[in-house]
Image 1 (tube, one colour):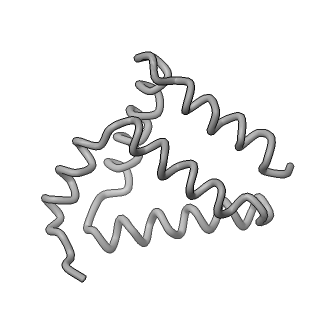
Image 2 (cartoon, one colour; image 1 turned 180 degrees about the vertical axis):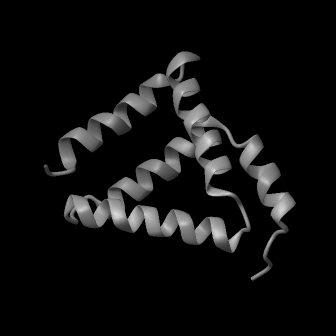
Length: 95
């Protein structure tokens, strides 16, 4: 598999759009919904950190972009999908 350069990945991160982020977030959430909450959080954190390391990205920078995309999605008229993901999170992820 061809690994993109860190700059290419950084460019992809900066150009990502709300819709693509929403799709991936839902797929991840759906895939872990049957696991205990603590395991979900640790697993997602581990995966996130491993991916940042693999693609040579600073996790803080990626979280900053993710945060911006999340909150932008709620303020620019595309919030219905983000709200649906949050609803799925609240209903399907057991507490």
